[in-house]
Length: 123
Image (cartoon, rainbow, N blue to C red):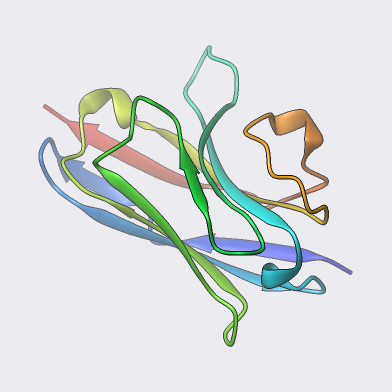
């Protein structure tokens, strides 16, 4: 059974930083594509960052230069370092896994999801 459990969310002021973590079980983080998505109230879920099996990252334009995705194959964890946070980054953040070689930022292609962790950025 695949489980993805996020942690690290919270409330910060604009300009602050947070680090999200995702603990994976039942699936090997290094074996496919893993990613972070977010969903704000009244908005669709959107891709934030993905990382493929080789470790190559991809980012949404809105977070490039501010967020960094990484994975620890030994610990089977996925992380998202978020710096220079803005109020528009406020959302529920989800960890997702896609056991395929090809990585994508499209939520519908991810088979496994965590329950999410809330990030709130105040101005």
